[in-house]
Amino acid sequence: MKRKLSTLFALTAFLLTCFASGAAQTSGATQVVNAFYGWYFANQANWTNLSGARQFFTPGLYTPLEKVIEQEKREQAEILDFNPFVDAQIEAQSYATGTSSGNGATVSVPVSLRFPHSKEPGILHVIVRRGPSGWKIDNFVYPDNGNLRRTLQDALK
Image 1 (cartoon, rainbow, N blue to C red):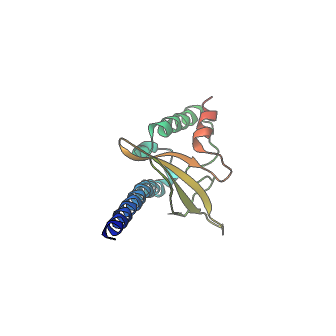
Image 2: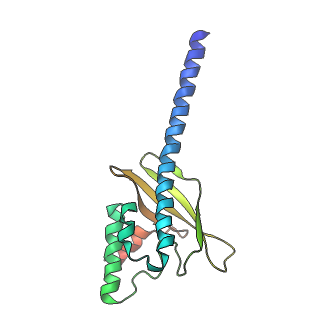
Image 3: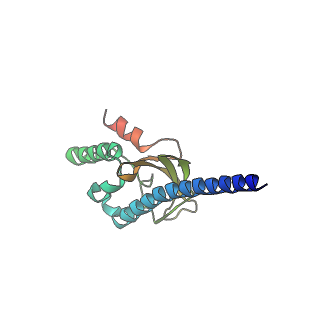
């Protein structure tokens, strides 16, 4: 009986540790998304000046995004016809993060965005990856299953 009880106790402790670890992983990813949107809403009118947001992105997302923005400025042409951080052509009023999902090194954080004169929020998913320097945003996935990485790839062809 003592053996079964100690085995049960050890199993319970292990499961609680795993759950706490998973919650810590997704909370770290959500913290990065919240920090990014804090920066974004403070700089919404000039979101194409990305230098202040570099810390939130993986190099795999930041580099092509910066190239497209520089190309837009150089050619004085619109390549992205929407704001990729809110998936809209208008400014958002507020945001809220939902319950993240995923495990290991990749987590999806849902973001609900409120827009002027709209009863329904816009929803997108921010993909966050854990690397040597911590959690970084690696992609934005939109309701139509489009995503920022693919949009940037197509724009740079």
